[in-house]
Length: 79
Image 1: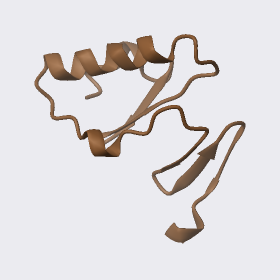
Image 2: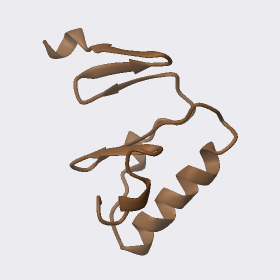
Image 3: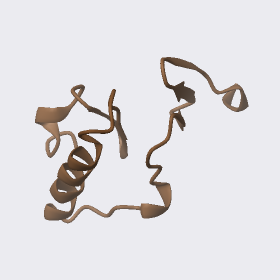
Image 4: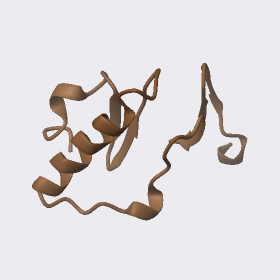
C-alpha cells in the first residue's frame, strides 16, 4: 500500500499495515482525495473492506487512539 500511495503519504493520508487514514482540514478536497485513493487501490486489485469505512467524521478510533478535531488521546478501552 505504501508503494501505491507513496506520493501522498503524510500529506493527507497515513498508513499502518492495511489501515489507511485520510485527514484534511477542510471538506473542499475530501471527495477528490478519497476518489484518488480508491482508484489507486482498485487499479492494483487490492481488496477494499467497505464495512470499515467512516466518512465525514470528526472523531475516529485508530490504532489505539481516539483522534478528534484538534487533538488526539489514548483509547481507554485499549489500556
